[in-house]
Amino acid sequence: MSTILVVAEQLGGELKSATLPTIGFAKQAAAATGGEVVVLVLGSGASGAAEAASRFGASRVLYVDGAQYADYLAENYAPAVVEVAKSVGATVVCAPSTTTGKDFLPRVAALLDAGFVSDAIDVAEVDGDVVYKRPIWSGNLIARVTSHTDITAVTVRTTAFEAPAEGAAVSVETISVSSGAATNAAFVSFDQVKTDRPPLTDADVVIAGGRGLKSGEAFGMLEELADKLGAAVGASRAAVDSGYAPNDWQIGQTGKIIAPNLYIGVAISGAIQHLAGMKASKVIVAINKDPEAPIFQVSDFGLVEDAFKAVPELTSKL
Amino acid sequence: MKILAMVKRVVDPEVKVKLTGDAQLDPSILDYKLNYFDEYSVEEAVRLKESGAASEIVVVCIGSGDAQKEIRTALAMGADRGILVETDEADRLDSLTKAKLLAKVVEREEPGMVLMGKLAVDSESNAVGQMLAALTGFAQGTFAFKCEVDGDTVTVGREVDGGTSDVKLTLPAVVTADLRLNEPRYASLPGIMKAKKKPLEVIDPDDLDADIDLDEPAIEILGYELPPQREAGEIVDSVDALIDRLKNKAKVL
Ligand SMILES: Cc1cc2nc3c(=O)[nH]c(=O)nc-3n(C[C@H](O)[C@H](O)[C@H](O)COP(=O)(O)OP(=O)(O)OC[C@H]3O[C@@H](n4cnc5c(N)ncnc54)[C@H](O)[C@@H]3O)c2cc1C
Ligand SMILES: Nc1ncnc2c1ncn2[C@@H]1O[C@H](COP(=O)(O)O)[C@@H](O)[C@H]1O
Image 1 (cartoon, rainbow over the protein chains, first blue to last red):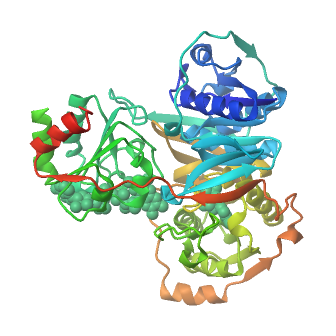
Image 2: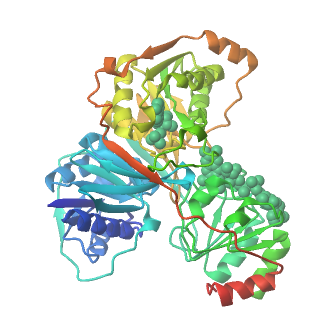
Image 3: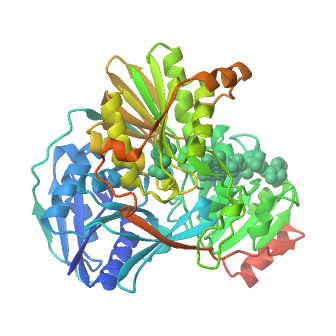
């Protein structure tokens, strides 16, 4: 009997949507290994997030309340997760592959002496082994791996799994842990990018801009198009590096991994590290004035045109 | 303060992937270089030394004998000496196994700070730094775009989902570099000449006495496969045609 522990992600008491496909992964892992799914929420006055997580098919939902979880800090999260993982007899501990999950879960893995699988896109039982698939080399290769440790820690690529269907809620169990607050690390600040648009990783439509836009102001044109389509706005690394867009908008190997129904890349060349973040989109559109731009090699529809002409025209005609 | 900079010799991500019949990598295609993210962490170490915050920079790599080349690259950027934990199995080692080896080097060297990349661009674990921090009990500042040392603390600005976040860590700490931390320098010719004479110690992993089994790492790679390939689609000649395809063919509008 295996126990798959999902560490949920919440911000200010609100469950982050990345948690749901992670529960989806956990259910698939539980099916492969014959086990159950337990969800853990850490927070301060954040039981609402635990309630929200309780309707997606987990056998148990555990909530730990503590002032040290009010703001996220790896040094505070990791010992608590380790304690709970041991107490529930977890065989797999997983978290979404967000910057939070990527930060604390390897720390948890090391403390548990657990093998670590990064960015899993599949899990299955094959000839007695639990086999995970994970993309490597900027998404150009997929590795099949298995773990030889008693516990395995896994970050989950959320675009690869579905959120489970909503059903009856299980009651949230509030539990306590003995670990306190770290003395060698302190949270100072979180500078949040404010936006009324959907988050990049949840949006059905994403409009992304690249260095070819040549200024932050030019992103305003993408925002107008995005508002018309209810889309999120993203950017290439070069556009972020140039200061045209905030780092939170970056799509790619070092940014967000997205898989919307529709991705429209504007003045983006299509470097492999950018493709690594959006190649799983259902429909890819590229607008670029260079017909040789590599992004056309992966686009369903390409328009060879100056962005400053094409984007306003597109916005006005939709 | 002594800084350890952990560097990896990685497969150049631009190589065209080729698999053998038994789902392994065709070694003939492989081309190696210093991990991009480690150029940023080495650069940061050199800047900390230039500013007087650091006194010595030691570059550490777990790799084959050939990885001396990548260590020399970091020495040419301004690091002082190198340590190669030599094993031909380096490419097969998982994050936990590597972190355990590096933790032993940290124990020996007692640095005030460990600088690493956030990600190895080939195996893409994004984990060794955090694991090393856990094993040594150090605080961690990951995905750093800012690294400000002040006495016995470091303030790390982190690139995170939703924006940026600052954490204040008591040294010793592990800091992992993101790509907006700095602009790595090119090694100068005198730098390259000097690097050839800088000390480079080679260690046998067995001598580190880490709790690992190099023949059976925690995570075993069973094989590889190619992801589904996307085909180039249609080039449309106007915005009207694009709208038509999105509405009537792809049905996404
Ligand atoms: C380790 C590493 C990690 C990386 N991670 C990422 C990542 O996560 N995400 C990412 O995006 N990149 C990443 N990169 C960077 C990547 O390699 C490219 O440098 C980057 O994606 C290029 O951005 P770009 O396409 O906006 O700029 P460019 O390559 O400069 O392309 C600009 C494009 O705009 C077009 N253009 C110019 N003017 C116009 C106009 N008026 N109208 C229409 N088109 C126009 C040009 O034809 C050109 O194709 C990474 C690189 C490294 C080394
Ligand atoms: N073989 C290695 N030798 C030394 N440092 C390494 C090695 N592998 C990974 N690292 C360090 O860990 C960082 C993150 O790598 P990874 O967790 O493998 O993605 C790298 O940027 C290096 O600083």
